[in-house]
Image (cartoon, helix red, strand yellow):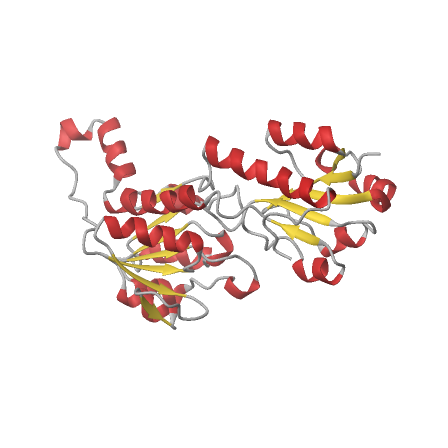
Length: 312
């Protein structure tokens, strides 16, 4: 008999097809009564296919007595109760590395879009203001700019390398100093005060919740720019909106938000903000590779091989 797994939400067609071929898949997101479905199939579920947003709670995993693996589509696993999974011997996997390049590219794109006011200038042309008012205000070059990276992990290092090509000076803040040439700050607000751009690419979760707060944004300053390609929970959204509104902060490029897909109304009206719908890894090539890794980790587990990208 095929192992039975629970799919938390819709996935790419080729991922669903591969999982359907190898397993008996129960789609929780299609159930009229999710509690009733879990009560019926819970004792038989051996795997969960999920993503970084939907995750897998301790309450859910506690109802799946035969659970062996949670295969997550995405790098972020803050929505998965890792402590519970570890205590129950449940393997958790994610999809790192295959998305590094595109997420880093998004961070660089947001730095360029904010510094060169690309969205505002596009609107300037579309509204006919170029003809009626002439050229828009001058933008800023990033050559020689100092960029502070919050979270110098695999993607953070990619961002640093790419921005180095543009002539940026790199600094970073994290849990500990690394054996690397970039300047290290053990205090985030101090780094924010010293840089022109602050890029968040740290994990989400309780330890980073609201870490980019009003103090950090004020330190970044009226000429500073905040870029977030991490998690919406990393920045204090109320403080961010206030800082942009009152000029305490110069600009922002945001790919993530606190309550996605909800975006604060005030941000939609600001021409010093560039917004993206959580598309850091949003290319055909990267999303396919992520999906393939979800399937491969599940396959390896159920064939007795070591999973490719374990978290626990």
